[in-house]
Structure formats: C-alpha cells, structure tokens
Image (tube, rainbow over the protein chains, first blue to last red):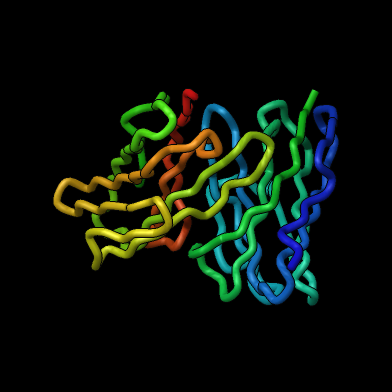
Length: 113
Length: 111
C-alpha cells in the first residue's frame, strides 16, 4: 500500500507570491492534516480535513488555506508569501480522522526568498 | 497555553545500550500521547502511543511510560541500534483535538 505522497518535494518562491502544495493520503484514509515544521517553532498544526470539510484549524493567519477533494486528496495554499513561511510542510493522513495514528508524508520543503 | 517540552535536546548512547527519552507536558486534561521518530529527510513516523488510563505500554524494543502525577512521558528503547538515530518527538492531544508536539530530542547512536 502506497504511503502519503506530497508534491512537490522542494519549492522556491519569492515574497508576495502564492504557493499550492499537494497531498495524496493513503488509500482509504479519509482524513488529511497539515503541519508546518520549522527549527524555531517545531511542528505546528495547520488544519484537518475530513470528507471534504475542514474539521479543525490551528492558529495560523488566513493566508493559509486548504481544501480536500472527493477522492480525499488535499491541497494547501499560502498566499502573499513571507520569509517566515519558509518551512517543511507535512501532510498526514488517518483512517477515521482526529489526530491518532497519523501517517506522515516526507513533506514539501518551501523556501521563500 | 498548552505545551509539551523535552528535557534533553540531544542524547548520545552507545550501540547496544538502552535509551531513555523524556518529555514533560503541561495539559493535565490530555488523554492521548504519542511518540514519533523523524529521520533526516523524512516525515515523522509513529512509534507507540498510550492513553491516559494506562501507565505503561510496550512495543517491539520500545516502552512508553506515563506518569500523570508529574505530567511526564518517557520513551525507552532497548538495545539501541544505529538505525534508531533520529529525532524523537512526543506529542499530546489536548481538549481541542489538535496534536501538540514537543521540541524533539536528537538521539545519536555511537558504534
């Protein structure tokens, strides 16, 4: 069974641009969560989607948004990029939702110049 | 606010020794705790979990201990191997059902 797949693996953007990251969960998993990982702040919860609905949201500005499609694939979007948005963005899926037994992808490393 | 912290940022052990990684949590209402392992270039990998109604849970070469009195969590790795070298994170689910991660401990296994 394939694991969680995130694309692209690396991304370089400049300030003010927007970016879209993609995540394909493990087959059969209906929940997708997104996390931001930085050396300074560690792993921080962004949001969770379950059956195309946002079920939970972390403390990030409205520039961070996401969505989930009917096939459970998810995208997250960051608009008006700032230097501080440089981070590893991790997607995790779970079978029934919530934050138990998450399976993480390898992440998208975003660099904002 | 809620927070989960680690006592030691780096732990160096000899191959074959046992490792103990510690974690403190602040939210006494948390009822689920998880340990993750993150190798370089990869996402966190689930190791073991424990619910607040348990004090101890064992897996393959790993044991998690939960002390609710002092809000302390530990991960014990038996017969540590070079492949165990990674960053280890503890995490808790708080009342908001958001996973809160600790800052991580780097485990370095010396041959």
